[in-house]
Amino acid sequence: MAGNEKIYRPAWKSFYRSILLIVLGAAVVIALTILAPFEAKIKGVLWAAWAVVAIAIFLYMVVRRASISLTVRPDEVALDQGILNRKSIEISYSSIRTVEVTQTLTQRVLNLGDLFIASSGTGEYEMQIKEMPDPHAIRDEIQANERSVKRRSEEHTSELQSRSAI
Image (cartoon, rainbow, N blue to C red):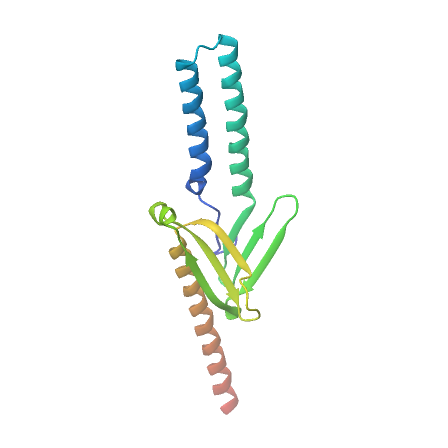
């Protein structure tokens, strides 16, 4: 990892729907094993089926989280997506047109949000990152870096102009 580079991934709490599904599945299996007159073998099959589904959901969460990273560097923002098939997008701060954060009510409660980053070269969002932790802080960091790059560029231009005037 380079100097001031920060890497963000979707938060574990962004998988609240998947976690809720695992918990609800366990509740259904518990209710069935207590209330329904099943044989022990059938109860074992129910628990085994729940375990297989829970493991599959958990593996989905791990792979999904590992497959997305947003890297905020001093000079650019980079989005890497995928594990087997990779897609990488880099946008320099001088090209960023807008950084948008959207949040549903649930996302606001969990301090999650969706980030959309557009460059000046297109009319679309090049980067669309769902369920990021503390999205306003990420946006503020990107905008602070953007201002810093602009300020350095202006200082460099001013320095060149003063040298050429001599």
